[in-house]
Amino acid sequence: NEFVYDQWLDMYRLLLKFKEREGHCNVRQRHMENGMNLGKWVTLQRSRKSIGKMNVAREEQLREAGFTFAVGQNNLFAY
Image 1 (spheres, rainbow, N blue to C red):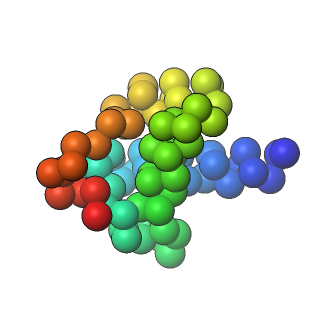
Image 2: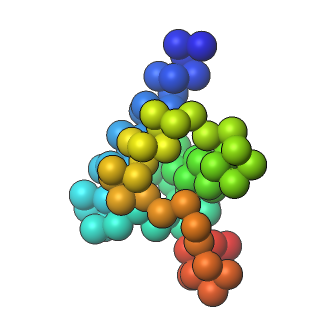
């Protein structure tokens, strides 16, 4: 679905913008970026990966950006 892909790409671009500003991809779950819930989107990407539903190309894009799929229980960003 082209719309879904474009929406994913828009969120990915917001993640890159966040990383450029903050120096990392550890987005808090409730973080809003340009009016979009980037934190929820990041959580969804981790969830999709953990249940085996992550698109391989998207996973590679996220990894290249420095995105971490595994978040420790004590990680302050995982709430």
